[in-house]
Amino acid sequence: MYQKYKNAELVKPGGLDLKDRLVGVQRVTKVTKGGRAFGFSAIVVVGDEAGVVGHGLGKSKDVATAIAKAVEDAKKNLVRIPIVKGTLPHEQKGKYGGARVNIIPAAPGTGVIAGGAVRTVLEAVGVHDVLSKSQGSSNPHNVVKATFDALLQLRDARAVARERGISLEKVYKG
Image 1 (spheres, rainbow, N blue to C red):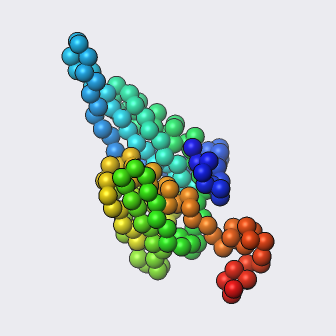
Image 2: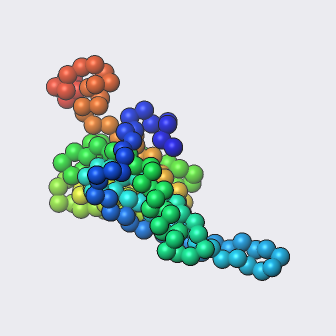
Image 3: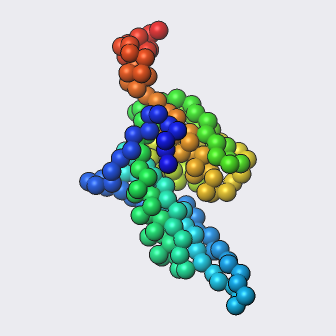
């Protein structure tokens, strides 16, 4: 799922204190010759609020099982996101489908300035100070995936130093 991100570190759910957050539940309809068959689709974000987060989709005939399936799916797709002093290492843009998300690090005390699905993802990651702007499509599925696109492109200074084969001091001082 995260193959295109070279610095995406996959995490196993064992031993983590994961909290699940419901992003949205949609009632979906399948029209058959016998009438309408109603079902539910739920999108959930799980995270330990310390840099590990994942998202999942569950579908079922009733809401509770759809949410349970979504949580199970989310636990299979956990990734580690670099967090520096409660905020992000740098500004980043993400996109998925028609959704565009811009996340910007903020000074301590700012809080999570984000709306809807972006806020849910950022709170699950454990970011405390961040500014964000969501543009284009407001479809929660695509907004969550666009936010993950932005988060997975983040790199902290240690990762940059390791990739370039230079010291951490040289990354900062040039």
